[in-house]
Image 1 (spheres, rainbow, N blue to C red):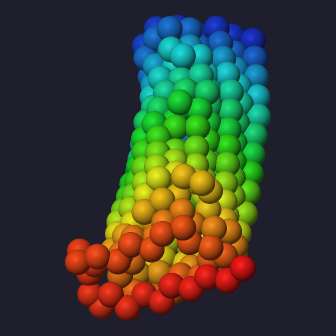
Image 2 (image 1 turned 180 degrees about the vertical axis):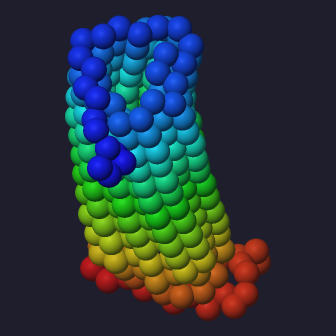
Length: 287
């Protein structure tokens, strides 16, 4: 909200058509419904929405400073929040895909997004708390400065090209997660999916459980502390530089480039003519 501005309260209204409340400022919407139409609240400033329903496309584009609580975005409200900044969203259900694009300063808490396909692209300074997403293919592309806690995700190809990410207490089911990321740290989480963390830089896993074939290959500066690896984690660490402590067995390790790997057991260690220099990774086991 703009400081020292009077707030207009609108209660129980229905809106439809294109640009129903275009460029309004400092408005609180309570129990309002935005029917099919486009760009209902485009170019707005200082909007609060409580217990509202959004049915039309693109309601919040180029919005500056807004708060959304206890609202519903129906499937028709696709691509609802783009090119905006300073959002707080709480206790809301989003049934529409392609939400949150090219945004700055997002705080999202107790939000469920059952259709999170192509959501949260190009967003910066993002905090998620108690968020659940599903059908989340290509989630968080090209994001930066992301802080996540108590999170559940189902969807592939997530967090590609992201920078400066911290995740705590998460369950992430995602093939090809964290590709070409930089400076990502994940604590006390479960990550399931093939080809985890390929081509990443400075990926740090602490007390995590991971599963899926060919994990953590082509990684630079990989650190694993007190992690566990599941029965599908074969051909791990190819061409990676790493420091890894694994408190479980590993099915197989293939051609790590440099560093240290320590695990309880390793079913197979593959070091062949394709290993890259310096080819000096120290691999140890203990029972």
